[in-house]
Length: 192
Image 1 (cartoon, rainbow, N blue to C red):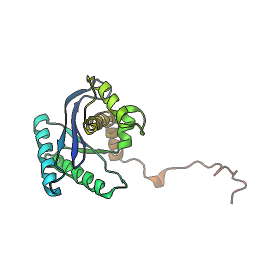
Image 2: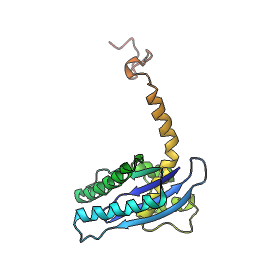
Image 3: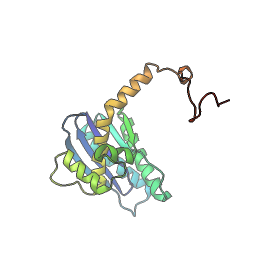
Image 4: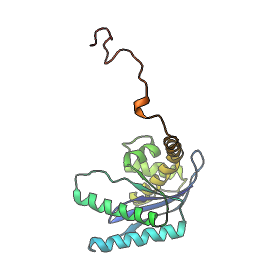
């Protein structure tokens, strides 16, 4: 599987392409950052991000695009720029018919380092190790994009199995039987 990871940002949008499969060695095919000048207006910056992502899609032909899920932050302005860059990445993928997966930062950190609270240095170090690189990709946005791609490659088989189970029609919640027994730590005799 070849995955384009996107760490969205209005000033720096990290891009990384990883190829591999769960349980097999992974290979980095490319890593970089799409940058936009802060003095440009937002619509122009979004066009520059789109052009950059399209160039990466043309060059690497991924089968899938993994984008960091935007989460609530205290700085609304930062969240808006991140969300807008994220939407551009999803649009570029959808235009080509490529599936898009969204992963939260904690999911990515947990997948790559084993801890959902890992710092950027830990993520960079593990990405370097997993992809057998000479040095951590810089800036951190580039390493984060590779981590997104790695996370998706590793999570995709389990996600696919869950989707198949749901498509086969898992039992509706109303038909699930709960065995009788103590509730909330009290015996049934005392419960009324």
